[in-house]
Length: 406
Ligand SMILES: Cc1ncc(COP(=O)(O)O)c(C=O)c1O
Image 1 (spheres, helix red, strand yellow):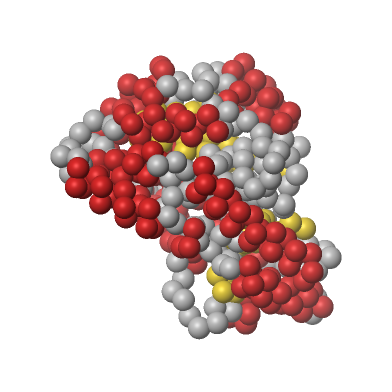
Image 2 (spheres, rainbow, N blue to C red):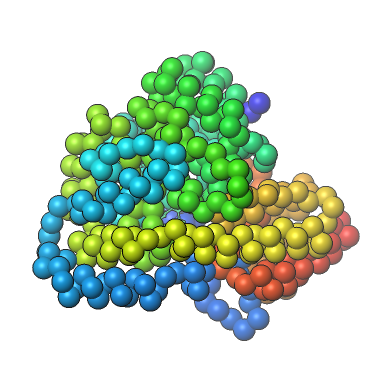
């Protein structure tokens, strides 16, 4: 078991220093994710949905209908009730029972995370996360000058819940525990059934909320799905969802499912941030969902399943025997563990320059500075299966060469 505590902002750090550290990570990641296409370049870097799986025509039709028939679509307004009802229905697919008034609409999951941090954190407080974490979470907590507590991620069963238990038993009281139980970004792993039960029991026992980031939760590709954490615990789990991955990121529409005691304050924080989500987008998405989304979800799950399977098969065929990788049951990402002698930053630079393949180094996701960096994150979302096979083959050859040269 391994745990670490790091104060992210050291005494004497200026706000600028902190901002530039986080900005560097974010902008480097965004740079890689949004690399302009260059002839022959294959990108496994981004977390961007496949353009052909975005329901562009259906959304355009929904938008047209709303603009033609709804006088409130271009006004200020209250959260659109019909959309909140659809979200309640979507949450049922995740095993979660909730009511529309517990659903707070947000500008994507990113704003949901920021609001959760504002809601729960005091300046300088603790927050508990895994060693490799979605970079946007770091950005959401950074303004609160947190002390970051980290635990490891097991590549089969996810977050090390024993380490969480140990930290809490020793007196740590984080403002919240950040968890991605399903389809982890960056690690492509899911939390085991038993670990889920234990994690929410710890949250309840110690009175520490879990912020469950379920951004990819509806993108599962195998039959044996597990209940979301919020399905197991309603009081101590704050659930984050989004339409970015199942419809389109440009909607900037996500949600929080909150325990009743936090609903009012969260609403006030949302209003202070940007008043409300676009009335037009809310209505257009509700219209789209009203026409039924089961077929759409089946279609995108089948599309991503094919890409995932192509990547896993290619890794088996072309990656050195000394590498290991996760087998994601959903989401967009495979996490590859490299042999210790390979430095992930260097491998990524060489992959771009020599193999024409963009991938993100594991170091970009380090929750705290100075973590050993021997991982790569490969996205199977944006490339077609044959491109994925070519990219993985090129990467495999590069890794074999590096290993052969010692
Ligand atoms: C784990 C995770 N959480 C949150 C987000 C933010 O998503 P949104 O576009 O809904 O703000 C992302 C986006 O990539 C993500 O991967």
